[in-house]
Image 1 (cartoon, rainbow, N blue to C red):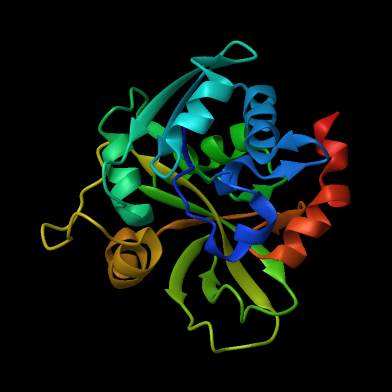
Image 2: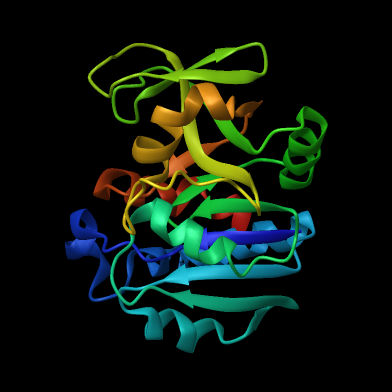
Length: 231
């Protein structure tokens, strides 16, 4: 298993809580958030992480070095911010496996990643999105699922219960990118949304715990909610 972890976020909304640290290094019960993701990946059988970094990348490199618990870490450094899409495209160019897991470095999802990769292969998809059901989709924007495929995306202004993208994907290493995409772009807004009919992403439904630490309230909640995953 090979994974790309996006860890280049600025963490603007968390600035008062980070005390100069990059967002993926936010302390959770005394340990950096990235350690929780790496522990989860290692337990899932991941052997190599392509860590996409930019803002304050030296802080992350100095902490983790070239490996975590026997799992190799290689750094893909953005000289300028590339957005989630540009960062993923850059990292995929260094991937070795045919299918690569992609995680956001500020989001936790209690999922079976080995099973997600197996599902991706069985569906014959170029793209698989992990989706979770929540009571109110307004913060994230909903996704429309039919059968085992994502067939549409909803605006964030919509509210009420529904499926959302958990920001966890499996992508084919040789994914065909439209030539009109700029160097910097959003993977969901600029690629998944306009290309949904062509891509027909597989929808991997997850009922495990999901938390995005991008706002102070959820960073506070993570201190206790994620404690069990530090064991």
